[in-house]
Length: 304
Figure 1 (cartoon, helix red, strand yellow):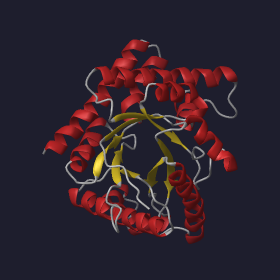
Figure 2 (cartoon, one colour; figure 1 turned 30 degrees about the vertical axis):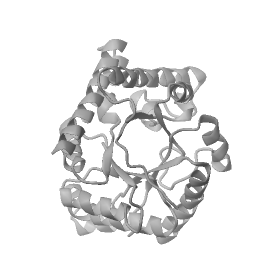
Figure 3 (cartoon, helix red, strand yellow; figure 1 turned 120 degrees about the horizontal axis):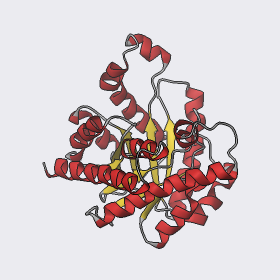
Figure 4 (cartoon, helix red, strand yellow; figure 1 turned 180 degrees about the vertical axis):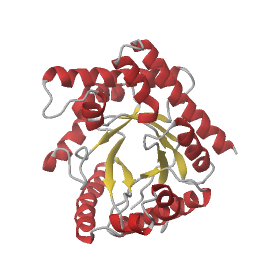
């Protein structure tokens, strides 16, 4: 089976759901129609920022959006009509264990929107609960097989949260975990998932502070004939300086093809808009500016 996607990929992700409900608007429980419409309108702001960025130099063939069906169905349809790269999540938001958003009906939802990529966010630590990991891997293999049969690209967002035992080992130092332990755990997770038959075309990877860690991640993502598999860096909601550092480190490594930076791009402008401290147009321009900046940083890092 040939898997992989190795063209540049500059994604503006805003498939966050609980972050918008609880974090941005402070809403809990089942949303009413008015609340749902409000979040959908907020996501239109980000979509307009994406379209503005395309008019200001972001290459149309490499730029893309990642948005959910719940609040972004109209956006997904419009983006497809415009032949933009679209990515759509398959996971239920905010769960510790990977679950399909629409249960056994996931395929019907994918076929309705036909995104360029179907994305999953998965928390997987190879030193964590083996039974949990196997259970997740089984579900993910089912999805992986289905997507490749149907000709869809598979994007895998790998998060490797520390176990309590690992944090005890590191005296609760999260920076040390990110620097010294997480890279090797990510490699272990990728190997385990590949061995279980989970075959992403693109791995969405948490930022790494050392170039050599990026090299090793790319190497394992592309092992055993997976030569076209790509890796992209995610933002983790970090500050702009840290995101720029991660992009710059990864950009020059063969196999790293781009990024997906969400909250660092849109959060502050949306808070300002919510609080009446910015107009809609100002929010659109601010988000577009951030997104354009990530493209510039990555391209510069790639050039050397």
